[in-house]
Image (cartoon, rainbow over the protein chains, first blue to last red):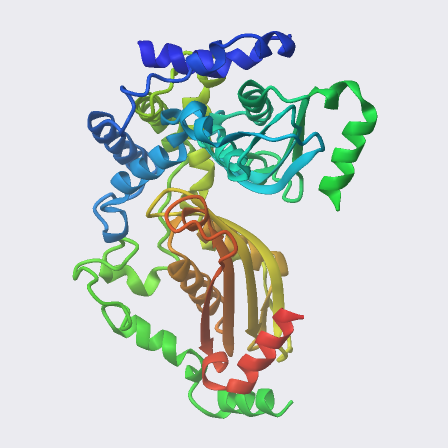
Amino acid sequence: MQCHKATAEVNGLCNMKKVADLCSVNGFSEAALDKKKHNKPDEVALSAMEEAYSTILRGLGENTERQGLKSTPGRAARAMQFFTKGYRETVQDVLNDAVFDEDHDEMVIVKDIEMFSLCEHHLVPFFGKVHIGYLPNQKIVGLSKLARVVEIYSRRLQVQERLTKQIAIAIVEALKPAGVAVIVEAEHMCMVMRGVQKKNSRTITSAMLGVFREDPKTREEFLSLIKS
Amino acid sequence: MERTKANLSDNLTGTPQTANRHLEERLATTKYPARTGSSQGVCENGIPLSTVPDSWKEERTRSLEDNEMSLPSLAAAYTTILRGLGEDPERQGLLKTPWRAATAMQYFTKGYQEKITDVLNDAIFDEDHDEMVIVKDIDMFSMCEHHLVPFIGKVHIGYLPNKRVLGLSKLARIVEIYSRRLQVQERLTKQIAVAITEALKPAGVGVVIEATHMCMVMRGVQKMNSKTVTSTMLGVFREDPKTREEFLTLIKS
């Protein structure tokens, strides 16, 4: 189905080895989902999901008729749609208006952006903070748009590595800056609530593109600024 | 301390069930007094009312065989959900996700497989100790029954023994049994308190839970820093403000 292929492309695109190739390809934003198809959550899909959640409740041994659980399939289905609303949004819509020409060539950092996502392996939340820094090249972006880009990519079934890279590439593609750095640190409930059950462990991933990758001093400045 | 001596003498010379008066009340009524609009026939766990007096023993027992047998239908349900979200269940990252998610959900509700009696029977000891015993900062992970989204927090338990003490880790195990279910924080707090009361018949029990609800943080109102605090005070903890105050002060430090 077309929408599945588009999603797969969006998510699969970041498996490519050479990140630099992507900067010259316009295709990244074209690979976003066809917006007309996914403007609002599909009603048919919603009722199928509600049925699925009823099955899950019964399969867990619960009594679906009791007061607390009566509307749970509907609530859980809508909650899950909210947690994956990033599939229905494109970076173009969010960024198009807020790119400005400005003669600024110093580092711009937005840090401690709260991020909530869903692990695609267990369908269990992982959440944390995102720190983004970029070195503008004649173009700057509205600051909240960085947070909105984080929202678009985090509200999906994700893997932290891919999330980091997608955010970095979206900014590169929109602004063509001299460099972009993204760091995501998160706690994975799939590790905390089950499995190894290590409560205090955090996973940190980073994507350094352009000057941040080539010049160690730039990278060092970014890393020390986000720590303070 | 005066209050413990006074209550101990109450227990020795007064009615034996003084400390458990509130429990007696609960057993005698057909539904929780504070609850409005609950259905007539069952209490909120779905357990028929006739078995409420034995509720802490009458655990829902899901067995490992049940788990295995329901796994395929759970996995199929999760595949439907993935498709409904617009994802492609055939892509590499999602290929085994229905099975992993189903197993994870069974783990998050493993409290239905366990019985309090199995956990507690051996570890109740006769001990002439009448001072407060507190186990605090017990990490708790549960699932909100309304949205099927986790809520996580800490549980603080205190009790005043009446000749019987409980192995300390058993308090944490009781928390595990009741939290690994589809829960509501209020009910979870009460179930923990009632289980300890029924097992030990102590002079009093206090349970405080503070938790962060992902259903409020990740969606809906999206208030990141909000915490929900619920408490259940039974016996001496309910009647004597100083005892309660001592408990609350000790868990804060």
